[in-house]
Image 1 (cartoon, rainbow, N blue to C red):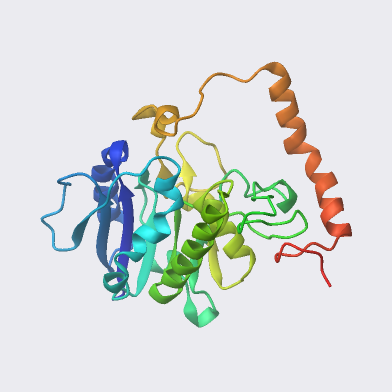
Image 2 (cartoon, one colour):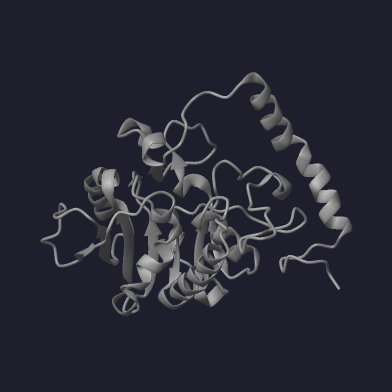
Length: 283
């Protein structure tokens, strides 16, 4: 019976999601496996903490976006304990496991060369790579040219064998700190870093958006792990210090053009220049 390390980060307002997460994953996720919960939180108490498999780890609440940007560093504070698991998985706070998810359908298969587990981002599962929301900034360590990349994966559910996932954390912590030292923040923070890491390799099992199914969406998959709408629980814009005012007509039109047509131009440019994942021109 494999030992599964469940990595869960909930500070500030995000602690509201833990009770439903814990109850649903205990009931439906990987039945027959031993699950150990590592809950990084600033809450003094959490439901279930009396269970010996639930470990409450004190974690201060960072301002956005450092709460997500530095999650790799946060996990590595418990590296010794995490290394004792067979598999490690990180879950966004607002996930609920609504259907039974078995080990056969979910766990990476090292015997097939799969050491990591990644999930398709539902906004891009049916789109071409040139339309993916990769970080296109060459100054960022998460940079992916328009002529590179294969999959777009979610930053909110990922994992792998303990060794593979901890190696990922070390590498992405290094890249994130390198960026910060140069005053750079990846476009979508940890998700951009994860997508760059995935673009460099092929040793992962890729699951459909059935395992990252946004609440209220209509996708051609059976919803197994659902993403709760955070806006039903708190003011997301306030937490992320974002301006919630609607865009002007001109801004919306420019945004649509930039999203739907400009990628063809940038793809042609990067292909002609033989751009690579190293960020420069091919030799």
